[in-house]
Length: 207
Image 1 (cartoon, one colour):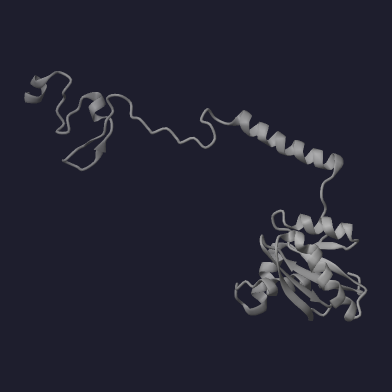
Image 2 (cartoon, rainbow, N blue to C red; image 1 turned 60 degrees about the vertical axis):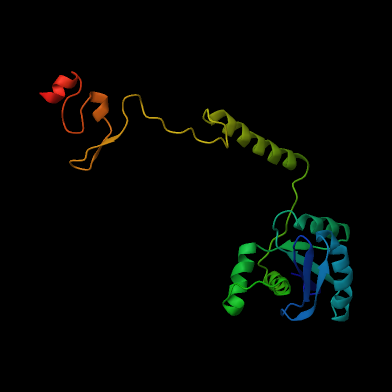
């Protein structure tokens, strides 16, 4: 991590973005909430850069959690402006949040500060977008898995309800009042619950 760059931690969401500018000692130089999609990163950078310059830094490095697709606008705009974007594993952020006050309470601005602190500790990585042949290879890998699932799936289509279980003809369950035990095959062989043989008609029961 370059010592001449301040860290801008961004906690991404769908409609509101939390940003915090921190130094390398995790001291907060400024923090603010922004309304809008992650494409408001230009507005965040326009706000963060003057704060970093006043603190004696020559620029900023942006850090965020790579959750969902929201980090991609940040990568696009940071590349366009020549700013480095780094990402922190969301699990590290969750564990660091618990270490702060031994709770799991979430606050957007606090999470932005935690993200910036993890970046100063170099517990981050550089994101990348697959391009050209690598993008095509990833697409073909997903398509291959889909074809394998389709080829090896059973007759029941995915998502269809399992058909009800049907007993074979003549194997209805009957209860024996003598011992209270179910005998699934009694009627199949013609045995009455009392123990008499019904295969030879009423005479067998009377015998």
